[in-house]
Image 1: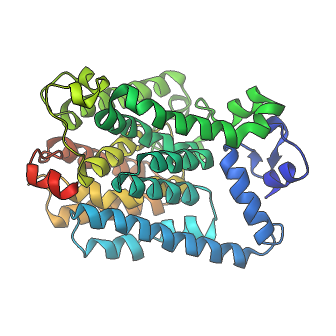
Image 2: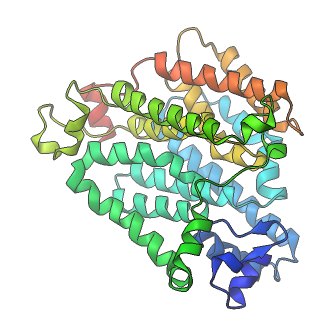
Length: 364
């Protein structure tokens, strides 16, 4: 509220905007949404009203997630109980902490629903809105780019990417006109250093290694390598070179098939999850970045060795890791072990992109 109040008072230089929690480091969409909350809650004093607003946001997020899962038909119904009722940490992030992460993820899930409805332009618009609230949504961007190239080719994807870029410029225009370098360096700071005392995933490392830039570059290299391997070996299965995605779909050797709901959701959720696995640091509010995607990742392409009981155990261990405060070496190691299990079954599980004409017609 203090950060937003600075904008209300006429300060558009991002380097001058800060509050009790530190400098403003989120893009312009965050400012506009929390400006609305500022007025709706009596300048941030009516906490109960804010909690009610976030409770509605929580229910809306669940609805959007259920609509996605309904179209994929991959997750057994009993799993939704755990998604709704079994996470103290997620409820805390929404209704007690009132973070901006849930706002960004709600817009992201709205974007995915629009993509599933073949509303690609509107889907990209909502995706860009989500990015404008918090930059973590960019972890879905490699998957979205792959889907756009698959569906439209390079030239056809450019207008959709243009929508994302233009919206960012329009939202940030007041701040870009005042101090463009200050706005971009603060709101899209990819090199921001995280504090070791807040990390959930790297507690077992020495602090010096955690802060080392070489370690950060190694994580980035691993992240990009795994994304490339998934794009090459799991997402792109037509038999043509992956460079064929740059061609117009009508000019490819293999006739293009309509993207199925599972192709769209699997690509986006996997892209985000790979980013989570190789994140430089995960803080407690970051749990909502992937919590609602975990059931799909565990059940959509199940390996034979991963039984229902083992999948529930993985969910339970992840929840336990995120609820351990402060994090310990054991909780961080357990979280990485669970992530490794999910990654392994995503890689070794059944083909996520079926070539069945029946599936394609049904999705169409």
